[in-house]
Length: 207
Image 1: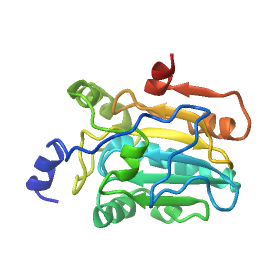
Image 2 (image 1 turned 45 degrees about the vertical axis):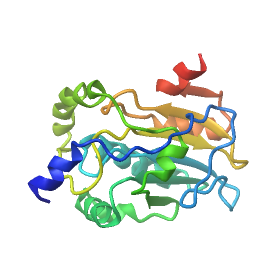
Image 3 (image 1 turned 90 degrees about the vertical axis):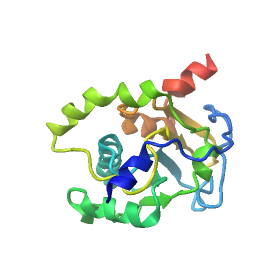
């Protein structure tokens, strides 16, 4: 990590054409690196992370990682827009990195942000990023601090989705701020047949 990489993480990333956020009840989009539905007929929980090094991305991934063993019949996929090398180093730096390797947990690198765009996740506002700064102190009490940013943009928005075995979106939650934390248990409930529900920006877009 150098000051240059930290500097560039604050620059707006190249513009990509984003689709609408898929609503609950719609078919999930597919891209070459994220195909829906899963070929084995299982449901999928997906999280699109902020940049590697972001404490909120770390907390989100750790929450997903902790839930995966209890639901071997569901795929859990974390999407990183940092490049492969930076993503690998970030994963290795996390607590208990051996837990990153689980049969139903996958980390996909989407450095070109193709999947992010297909799922309606573009860049954020200044408030989206800066308004979350107080949340970093809360995470520091849990031992989660800002790590070096080697790749990726701080302006990329994050989001979370649940897709059933037929490839239909059953849960959608786009983060309203960088410090939003998804409830993956809610997502699991929805793909397993719970009441359809959305949250965050996806809910507002449907209202």
